[in-house]
Image (spheres, rainbow, N blue to C red):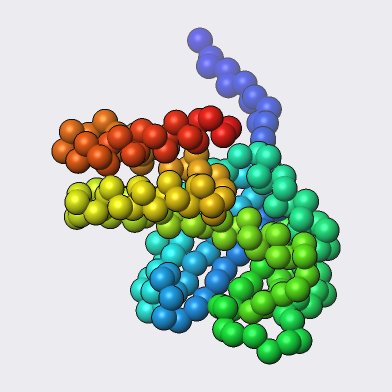
Length: 211
C-alpha cells in the first residue's frame, strides 16, 4: 500500500506585543545638604501608584512602592495642569531668600518630559502642589522612622507616635492611611510597650474617622 503524504498549508501567526500606553507621572525631588533627609524623591502616576525614596546624598537610592488615593492623585494632576505641566515655567522667586532646598517638579507622559527647578516660589499653585507632595513625603518619613524603631529602638516608638499625633493635629500630613499597615503591626505586637500600642491604635482610629 502506497503511503500518501498530504501537504498541509502552513499558517504563520504574527503576534504583536500590545504595549500599554504610558501613564502620566509627576515626580518631586528635593535636595538640601545637611538636612534629614538630604535627598528625597516622590513619584506619583495618574492612577495614584508611585514610589518614595530618601537618603543621604552619598547613599544609593532605595525607592519603595506606595499607592495614594484616587482623589489625591487627581488633585495633584489638576494642580500640575494649572501650571501647564511645567512647560516653559519659571518658578523661582527673584527675591533673596534662604536656601530651602533645590526642588524639581517633573512631568512625564510618554516621550514628553517637562521639568522646573526652584528654591522658593511665590506662585500660589506651585506652593500648594509643593505642600501636598511634601506632606505625603512626611508620612513616608514617619513610616521609615517607625519601622526603624520597631527593629532597633522599641523604647523610642512612643515618642515617634506622639509626634505623629501632633503632626496630624497640625495638618502636617496627607495620605495618612499609608501608615496603617505599620501601625497595625505596632498595635498588635506584645513585644512593644503598651503606650506605643495604645498610641498606634489611637492614630489608626483618627485616620479612619477622617476618611
